[in-house]
Image 1 (cartoon, rainbow, N blue to C red):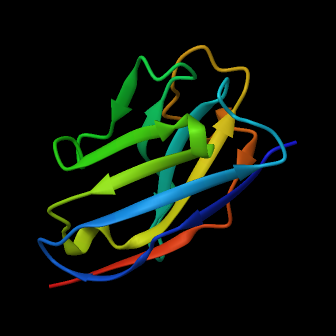
Image 2 (cartoon, rainbow, N blue to C red; image 1 turned 60 degrees about the horizontal axis):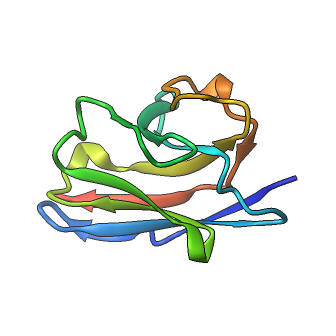
Amino acid sequence: QVQLVESGGGLVQAGGSLRLSCAASGRTFGSYAMGWFRQAPGKEREFVTALSWNGGKTVYADSVKGRFTISRDGAKNTVLLQMNSLKPEDTAVYYCAADRSLLHPSTWYGDYDYWGQGTLVTVSS
């Protein structure tokens, strides 16, 4: 069993940056594919980015490509999401997700077995 806890959300002005962290407990997730999803008020959960279990492959949504970066800190059992050049449309609750069976990073939320509770990111214009 893996427990995921996100942190780092907050209020930022458009053009600013935030770094989200997803800390795992219960088991090391070095062999897990990891993903970040987000859900804005009144909208469905959408894919943001994902990382393969070995860190060799990353996938980004077109809306965040070139602005967001996902990375893994194995020593700290943490996955990071660096978000730069933030826009008001990035406002959402951000969730990290993990799955042990994925061979490649998935863009579909249904593929992930473990989820954090979410952290709110608000970007003001």
